[in-house]
Structure formats: C-alpha cells, structure tokens
Image 1 (cartoon, one colour):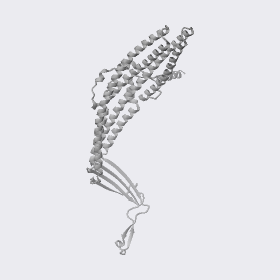
Image 2 (cartoon, rainbow, N blue to C red):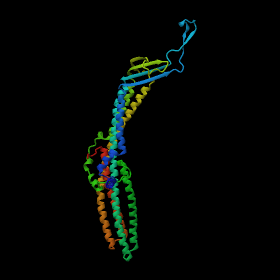
Image 3 (cartoon, rainbow, N blue to C red):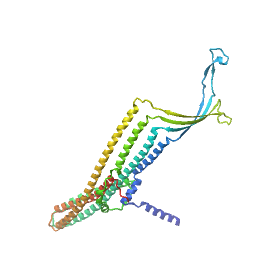
Image 4 (spheres, rainbow, N blue to C red):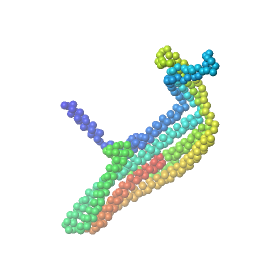
Length: 446
C-alpha cells in the first residue's frame, strides 16, 4: 500500500512538471526555432543531401565493380547444318548437329575505371558549387526564420499588452458609467451623458473580444514558427517595452553596407558560377572519353544440372582493355548547346548586377524604415502622455459638470487610439530593426 502511494505521488509530480508552460525569452525563442522550425530543419537536410550528392559525383570516377550470374537452359537446342561430306557423307548433303550442352552457367565480374572524362571533372566542381548553394539557402532560411520569430514574438507581446490595456480601460469606463448612472438617477445630469459613455463602453468591449481572439491566433502563429504544436502553452519572458528599449540602436543606421557578405549576393554569385560550369560542361562534351576495364568469368556446361557438384568442370577467362569514345559530328547539336549555355551565363551576369543594385536599395530602404520607426516611437510616446493628460482633465471637468459627455467620449477615444498607436510603434521598432539586420546580414551574437 505504501508503495502505491509513493507511485501515485511520483506520477502526480511528474505530470505537473510536464504540464508547465514552456518559457522563452526572445533569444531563446530564436535559438529554439533555428533548431526545430520545420523549414529550418528541411534546409539543414538539404545541406546533408548536397553532401551525399557531392560524394555520389566523386564516386562515379572511382573504380566500379559489378558482377553477374547467367544460367541458361535450352528448351530446344539450336541446330546447325554442317556439310555431310565432312563426315564421309555425300557431297551436297548436310548433317544436323547441335553444339554445346543443354545447360550453361556463367559468373562474371567486371572492374571499370574512368581514365579521362571532361564532364566528370566539371561535375566535381559543380558538386562543390551545389553544396555552397545549399549552405546559402540554409543561411537565408535562418535569417528569415529569425525575422519571423521576432515578428511573431512581438505580435504576441502586442496582443498581451493590448488585452491588458483594454481590460483596464473597460474597468475604468464601467466605473464611469456606474457613477454617471447614479448621478443621472439623482437628477443631476442628462440621460445622454450615460448613453454616450455606454456607446464608448460597448465599442471598447467589442475591441477587447476581438483582441483576445487575435491574441490566441498570435500564440498559435508563434508556436508554428517555433516548430511546436499549435496549441502548446508557452510563456514569454520579455516585455514589449523592454525589447523596444533594447532595439533602439541608432549606430545601426551607420553600419557599413558590405554587399558581398549578404546572402542574396552570395546566392546570385553562386548562380553565376554554376552557369559558368554548365558552359564548361557543354564544351567538355567535345573531348574524347577514355575508360579502362578488367573482367574475369567462369563458365560451366552440362546436359544436367550438375553445377553444385564438386567435380563440375569450370572454364575461366579474363580480359583487360581500354575503350575510347571520340565525338566527331553531332549535326551542330553540341554547338547549339554551348551557345545556349553562353546565353544563360550572360543572363546570370546581369542578374548578379541587378541583385547587387537591389540589395543596396533594400538596405537603404530598411535604414529609412528603421529611422522612421524610432522617430515615430518617440512621437507616439509623447502623444500618449498628452492624450492621458487630456483624458484626465476631461474626466475631472465632466464629473464637476463643466464638460459634456461628448467631450469626455472624444478624449477617451483619443486616448484609446494613442495607446494602440504607441504599442504598434514599439512593435515597429523591433520589427524594422530585424528587417535591417536581415538586409545587412549582420546578426548580433548572443
């Protein structure tokens, strides 16, 4: 009985541990996503596949050994006609003779080795470039996953802050409605004052309900980005104001624009390199191919199946040789393929130049957006302070009978709008900094 109680306590304790929410700071969320995000994992698998493909290409130039076993049984043996006079018969007549035995078994092993093949040499270079392209794709995927986590994490914080503010606003406004209702019941104000506040309260409750639904969606989106189940309970350690303060990095606006270090430039550069190798490949097809081979075989013959007997006689043979394939004329097919590869190379050169210009524009645009986000944040922060003071003054005036309910409603609406704009401005600072870091390919090391 005592053991059962202990077992029950252990089970309850372990289940409580597993039921706890997973907790993430922003950096922990990024690190978790880079390991568990499904897109990031597939990009890592692509690198492993590229490594295997590289070895697959290398292996085609190494010795290749194959073996075969052939068993033949003549249901009806082939008959050959031999002049009968060879056997003492009459001239002009033929004797019917079946050569060989009814059953044969042949076992052969062949060793093949490339000696020279221009396309193989190009293939080795292409495999290396393909691996680099896969690594570039992984790097770009990681950058995008990082930015997606920051956006999703920020959206959750925005939703949490919005819900908290709206709940506080609803509570304050509900108190105002209750107090105004009592004043109205005592005949000290008009019914319109109550109705104005009730309109604002109804609109605020509707906004709160919608924001709560968006909050749930924001958590689900973050879970997907992190590579978790969509309904996994999680807790975020960072706060929106704290992250905004950490992301106010003015020096980033003066960061060097090293275009060649950006992942998009690397991808375009490797694409150009791959087109150069394709041109080289087409040219190599005009070169001769030289291969060596060595084979050995054993053959057994019998009219009955005696191949497993110890006294079965086997006849061995072996052959070594070299073969050369020399392309001579292809009806200008190789020439057309080479010209097409040259055209694609010229296109890739222009694409590289275009990519370089677009990256410069993207960085300039990202810097401009980040600078505006910082300026807008400061502006919205100041506006929020003004809106709060205006709303407080109108509350005092309203309950002192100096101001109308319409004036109070306007001040409250202005405050609610300023609150949401301030929260959005904080989120914009975080997101725009992430976009600039992605464009510069300068990710802070943590």
